[in-house]
Image (cartoon, rainbow, N blue to C red; front, top):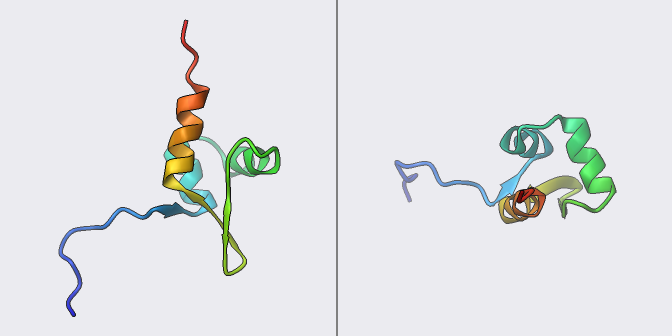
Length: 65
């Protein structure tokens, strides 16, 4: 089977990718995970953040004036 010619967006983000996606530091991501403000998944001992959870966190963080 051949590889698709278009990039498939990942449903799971590493901590570094989540930090880039949300434009915050790695330390902030770890703090959000520790405080359970941002959901995490564990895959083979690695911590990942589902893209939908990062988007949901961002939606909750919107401050409507």
